[in-house]
Structures are given as C-alpha cells and as structure tokens.
Image (tube, rainbow, N blue to C red; front, side):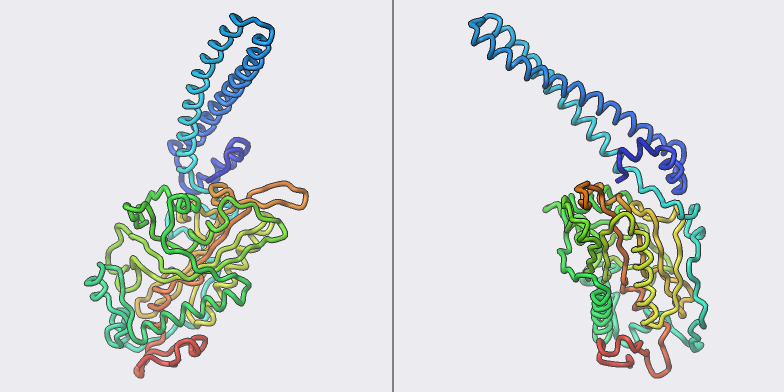
Length: 426
C-alpha cells in the first residue's frame, strides 16, 4: 500500500498519478479521507499519550503521599487514576477503530503509476515498447489451432480435466506432458544462470501473505479460498516467494536479492468466456516460472529493464514472435507502479497472447510486508520489489504448437531438445 507519509507530503503527485488509473473525483475523495483519519489518529494518539503520562505522574504522587502519611489524599489520587484508566481504555478503543478504518482505506488505494506510464483506459491504449520486426510464421492452409493439435497428437485433454475437476483444468499427457516439463526446467535453468536462487515454495498461503503482496482484498474474486483452514491457493509464485522476506530488515550489501520458483498457479478467472478463451488461452490452473527481485530504490528501474531483457532472451531462444507492451495506467495491476507485458504471436489464431508481465511495485508491497533494508549509515528504508513471469506456460505451449506445425509433425525449438529428448512431435 502507499506510504501514509507520502500521501500526506506528496498529495498532488499521488492524485495526479491516480488519475492515470482513471480514478474520478469521487474515488479520489479517499485520499482526503485518509488524511482526515490520520489527523484524527494523531490527535487521538496525543490525547492517549497525555493521559498515560498523567497516570504515571499520579502513580508516583500516590507513592509519595503514602510515604508522607497522607492516606486520604492518596486515596483520592487512586480514584482519579481509576477514572483515567477508564478514559485510557476508551481512547484505545477509539484508536483501534480509527486504525481499522484507516487501514481499510489504504488497502483500497492502488499503487501510484510511475511518471513514465502512459495515460489510457483500456488495453487498446497500451504502447508498443518493442515491435516484432521479423517475418511472421507462414502456416499451411489447413493449419489448426492448438486445441485441435492437442487431440491429433494426444498432448493434453480438456474434457478429461472436466471429468476430474472442472472446466479450465487441462490434463497433459505423453509428449505434451514432456514438453510442459521441459519448458519448466528450461526456464528455471535460465533463471539460475542469470543469478536467481531457486525456491520451492508452498502452493497455499495464509491471509497475511496474500495481503502483503496485494492479492487481498481480492476485489476481482480471482483467488481460490480454502475456507476450513483459511488458506489461499496461490495465483502466482510471487506471493510465497516475496513473503519469504516479510518483516525482515536486510543489509544494503545483500541487495539485490534474486529468487526464482516454479509453481502451478490457480486463478478463478471469473467472468471469462467466449472464443478467445478456448483451449489453453485461459485456464484455471497453469504452470509458471516466476522471477522475483528485492532491490535498492535507486536501482529498481534499471533492474526492471534487466528483467525485461531476461524474458526477451527466453522468447528469442524459443524462436517465438513476440512484442513488448508498456501498459497504460488503466490496464495496470493494482499493486504495480510500471508494467511491461510480453505477447506472443499465435499464427493459427492470428492474434497476440499475453505470456508475461514484468512489474516494478516500488514500495507498495514492502510497505505492507515491512520489508526493509539498513544502509551503510544505519538508516532503515523500505526496499523495492519486482517480479515477472519467465514464463507462463499455457499460452507458450499454445504458440509453440501452432507456430511450429508442419505436415510431418510439430517441430520443437532447438533450445528445448536436450530437455524434451525429441525434436518433433509426431
């Protein structure tokens, strides 16, 4: 969440930034409400501190009076202290209520977009940061979309997923399962080569973890909630991996901290339907390798471009046509300050499919999770967090199958041969 002191001290900048997210005047009233609640909190805290100071003063006075044999006066002081204790309790309850209301408001405000983020309301307003300038794949006239190729080569089964679980849970089999596993290992190996520590995190998290990275409150209803144990299936490895450092103070010399993880990801994708979500285009469970960085604030935007470069190299090694979009304010995720999306060209569907988002969250997550670093002078500051998909497999698989289909079978990119053990799906 945004830092309270930043909202107070840089209100004009925050308001201007939130307008990039198309916040209207009614929504922006939350900023004034936050400041007003904070004023009440400060005033209430002073009154509470003064009350406690008076109680301490009177407690010392009681001891002195008793020592002087002034028992009656001491008893009067005790009654006054008892009244102050009742007052203290009331003030504490009031402070707790103010803090609750203030936290709820702060949780409702998205991150402030970076100054370089373009204005816009919809995905159509995103800017092309890097366009594909090479030849697009040319497919035969009878080229098939990936869901038909899956049936032809027995690669994955959506109907079986319905039988086992429900719609949107594919079952990979045979060479399809091998391709899936090969991609996971390839992405992990590339991340480790780039200096990321491999992590194997839990696939469920508690409420504190989900709240810390911005998944809660779940405004879009995307998370699967295990109500009996009050745990959440992770929508991305970002959640458990970033929370490894929750409530920690790291040394400046240890930055950057770079971690990578493979996990299945679970998203309800409520309201998703239509031809554009057929096959693997949108599923409820998919595999993904995530890269996460904890950075010094002075280096986080350089690190962001380094992550963009890393994902670009993965796309190039997979020989897939791709482009990079700089998201506009209206299309960014709730917690992001700046996001680049990678899209891969689906030759059979003749459309772009999103396969990665690489984002800088600045202090939005670290403020929630109290992830800080201590500089050389002993000063404690909030670190910056970043993450990116490197990569999300479902749509990568879709594009690989469609773009590489031939009359003889589906060709496998050379970078994957040592992982798959085969060069073509036949």
